[in-house]
Length: 442
Image (cartoon, rainbow, N blue to C red):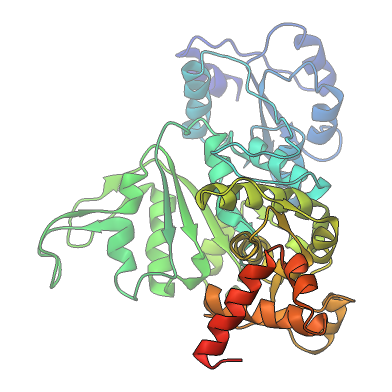
């Protein structure tokens, strides 16, 4: 085994030291070590203990954990503790070679450790929050970004799964290479294969020119399969082959093309349930689910809502050419009290509407339009707020009218009070009412 390491690493000028016990390893770590390969057995040779006890001594080292019994939960734990990769024994020569090349390419510079950011507003991430859950996810993303393992990002619609995928790419050695996202649900059956793998001219009716597939475009970088659960099961087999063989077969071509891509996937479904129902290939599921990341719904990280509100206020005021508006404490309280079934995307829509509807620089409760909910959920979220209900597809003008009439009703048609609550001049209110009267709608 020592000869194997010497043979592969020696050609890169890397000296190899081997030890039978962790104690001997600790002694040798007094000198600079670029790569640590630790054979974890969970007992005498415990990789987690090794990482925790030597955090400072190996902070600038790439640590690779090898095990005879790979486990997904263990993989996540090791990544959180700073491991670069987690692999089954025996270690493949190609993998060891890639670690050596990575060290050479980075000129043995220390690998950046995760830096948690309470409110990250940088243009390239837009992951907002200060909750322990979101900080844990950011830390995990920054850890797994350094390896090549596939990542399955799971969470409800609107939770920001694609942003998580982009963060992994941005924190990875592939950051200067392409990031290509493919929404598997947006292509009709039969067209996704060509989109992913490309096709030759004349490969099928309508193929009037050669097309380069997304996987080839992502070569050297990262490809994201968004909503992977929606992929046709026959195409899943071809994707599995591409991942395993590291090559793609364009439609109509007799020649395979080698590719080097990092695979990320997202889903808002219970993918394991899809496997049980024979809607998703079990082998592909396990190939994708090497490192699972679960993105929590907004209702489980409500402490992040004020920061998200502030971010969306700044964003939509800027996009609409307004000075940044502020929001009242009562309005924040109302928004924080919602369950947000549509998650961050729904919250952003509500803030965008409030920015447009509010004619002053202050957003109040009266400017908060919430989607109509049913039964117990409506009672739970409403509290003492007299909410204005809206329907999907309602125009801004229709929402504005509904808000004005609702406010007038609440104050028994006191126009001065209604204007104050709406943040507009009473003359503006009077003009609006005359407009509705001329339309014959009041």
